[in-house]
Length: 392
Image 1: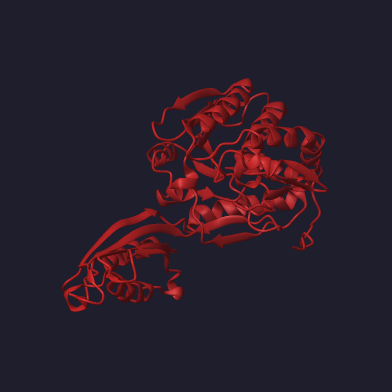
Image 2: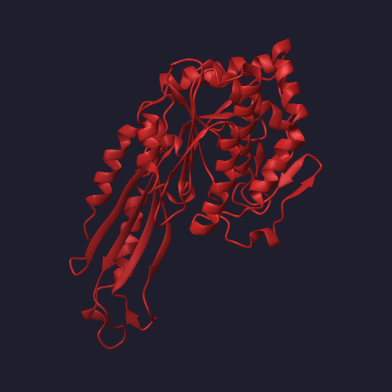
């Protein structure tokens, strides 16, 4: 994939000093990212995730942060770190996660390596580089000001990649106390655009219960669950409305046992994406209003919208304007993007808290074998984050 030429503008002397600060420490940042990547942390392995949590907590504690561990039974613990500031303004929340999608042992076939300007490895982009940027951004502000210009809270959760069920309440509780939320998930594209809108996410299961019978001897006595499900799939996919940014995708279908048996059960797993919160109730009502075409079959719908959309509200737009000004001073034109995937920023934005996402590293291949970041972009991203903490 070709890397597009960045749109550059004239930077200010102070911004250049800041870029130089992070450029001089770029090797340290890379070393920290490698350290974090080489501590594997799949969402479903509490021991592994907690091991990484301890390492990250120690780094923030060394900077004077007050560490608070929020225990979780089924997932890794969640990490909160509070930093005092010179002012009594509301804190800024730096939000992210340290779980990854890769199973233990992935490093054996996908090692953390440097090749030219790329640093590769499982979770390097999503989002262990973002964690390192948090650490060095806070360190920089302390170097420049003696103490932080305002209070900052860091929240790193352990289950973002699997739905954030155990951390959502904590994320929302902390978000209600802050002035703004900065999410250090990966940026969009090689241009490094920030994310000002994300789709909300819903997951549904449509289960059909029919009646089994012998396909040759008693065909008419059966009720084919797969046939019924096929008709339901055609109906639910018709709920898609691209003009509204609403999509319905049937991603997994299962059912039946043998070809000579009229199947008694069939199930579909359905992914729903919404761009607007006002469409959530409508699509949920449609899903729950499904009824069997065949009266011999029973139909059950479970699930729902589990992540609200992050809409480009006035508060989000205001944060983006500030980010654009900071990037301009640093010497480049910062773009924005609306994306289909969700993050924990959806929760905070859904509460009406100004939220800006995609402030993490620039790279490609999240969740894939070629996952990597661009090392040369790390100073820009760190300088952008520090500037936003000051500007909120």
